[in-house]
Image (cartoon, rainbow, N blue to C red; front, top):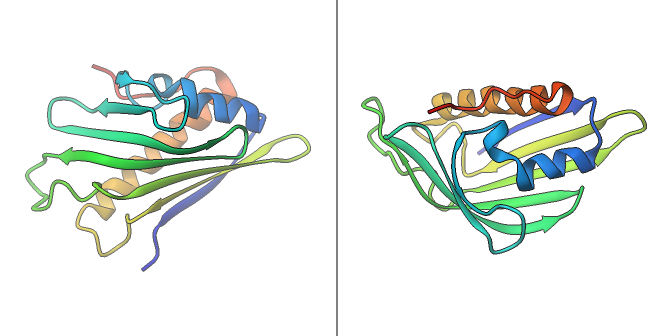
Length: 147
């Protein structure tokens, strides 16, 4: 089954992308952020209102190259989903590649595939927040979930 994946080109250095993924999650994903996300073993939680949250452990962190997140807990409590915990045990891989005047960022969410009930909703969410990350890196202002 094909996992969700997307690659974007950024007018930003891979180093800046790594910084955003390791230290600036509230500025592009969700302002409702607790925990730490800077190094292997760190755990953080992002919330999207009262009914959606993800708790993520940093499995690997190689500056300017790759960050791997393991989803340890998740709830997507919306009425249209029967299985509201599908993200638990999935892996989110961020890979950065520096080019001459830009960089590439590839996101692969292993375990988020078309067989998963939330695939349409969740891939749409990733598209939205990867767009926010791109905006943040290129303009300094992302569009994270706000309280």
